[in-house]
Image (cartoon, rainbow, N blue to C red; front, side, top):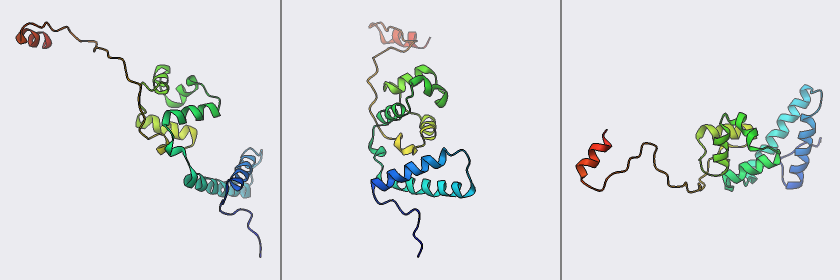
Length: 153
C-alpha cells in the first residue's frame, strides 16, 4: 500500500513542516500543474489547522493589526494605499480614536490574508477629548425664548 505524501495535520511540528514546504513551492520559479495541485492541497491542510487552532479570534483587533504590521515590517504609511484611507485616518485607527468600518475590515482581511472575524471584534476606543461642534453657540442662561431663537437661526 502506498503512503500518502500529505495527511491531515495532527501537531504543531507537522504544521510547521507543511508551512515550510508550502513556502518553498510558492517561491519556486517554475510551477507545474502537479506543483499547483500540491500548493492547493497544502493550503487547504494549513487553513484547516489554522481555523481549528487559531487564537486570532481572541486577539484585540488593533493589537492584531499592529502584530501583523510588525511581522511584515510595515509602517502606518504603508497601510494608506492598501486601505484607501488618509494618513490621519490610519493614525486614528492605530491610536484607537476611530473604529474599524466594515469596508476597512474587509480590506484588512484581504490584505493580510486572514478571516474578517479576526478584525470584527469589539474593542475599546480611546476616550475622545470633549469638544464642541463647529457650529456650537453659547446659550445665554437668560430666557428660554432667547436661547430657542438663537438656536434656530
